Length: 412
Ligand SMILES: Cc1cc2nc3c(=O)[nH]c(=O)nc-3n(C[C@H](O)[C@H](O)[C@H](O)COP(=O)(O)OP(=O)(O)OC[C@H]3O[C@@H](n4cnc5c(N)ncnc54)[C@H](O)[C@@H]3O)c2cc1C
Image (cartoon, rainbow, N blue to C red):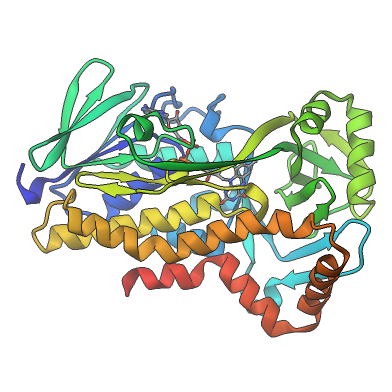
């Protein structure tokens, strides 16, 4: 296949695979073909409801400033806006200890520190945009079952046929069967914890404030959601608990669940008025040690699935996707193949620092806040109070979490 007519096949149409398809469609020349293969049925264009899909379930996602910048560049922001709740403040505290910190968008001179979107809403927007891309072929439901090197490219096996591609992007999630099948080396660390999620309605307005409360069992986050007709003061809960506790809270009577939540979080938002569907996700850190190979890239949760404490997994993956699409567009421009080993190795090297820093932060944060050593925990509490006293320290923390420095370096 000629360099002008590159064919990129993405295995996995979750938030990362779909976003990458849109970025590639925007940045690669008209001659390039993109195929996205998704294993589970996604709704047809015009369907108001997504229905249940594991990648677009009842979870919500905190979008960082870097993600907002990328979606603005892709022209998706206006469609997303009605479903977004801006985060104007983040309140960080630890149960039963002194020391809390308030980070604010006003202090950064930004319109928001981040935005929260319900995953089905993000899914609908991404999918509608994908249906408008003439050079993007959606094969759904279908599955990528295997891949083998073929000449300079790859032969990809689907359920009932084989397709040739110049580059295969493996974006089939944390439990990636393709990554295992192709022998990409992976490291896995289980936390012995689960994240319990639910949408909640409170008595009081959140006023754009997100809460991160560290407790002896793990962090509890409440993220602002836009109002609905039934509930004006909605928040998305992500509560890290030991696996047995999470299972018990998932099944507990609503009154028991609400009382335990208020015992942990306090009455800042008044009473819990409604509790939506509860689901729990076992937590592990999974990292593909090798992310690129001739004709192959591992992306999204398949490359790194993180603890959700800092809300960074998707934001990091989107920065990877932006860097990859930029690197591929540059390669095609220079007459190189998209599966070229040197092009992919350079991409992996460019992404190493941001990935290492973000993974270390989301892995280290829960442990830091669960420390019982009195001296170390005093240091941590002082650091939290210190953050409140020193605007420069706060600014540095927020800039890092927003991912802007890492995003800006993509054009370096
Ligand atoms: C509780 C919780 C809260 C979170 N909150 C945040 C947050 O606030 N901010 C943030 O940045 N991140 C957050 N994350 C992380 C974020 O959800 C993930 O980073 C993101 O969902 C990864 O998307 P993905 O597309 O890589 O993988 P997935 O969502 O797993 O999608 C993979 C897709 O591949 C498909 N597939 C699988 N196998 C095949 C195959 N062989 N062929 C074709 N298709 C296949 C699947 O059907 C699926 O649609 C959170 C995670 C959790 C668990």
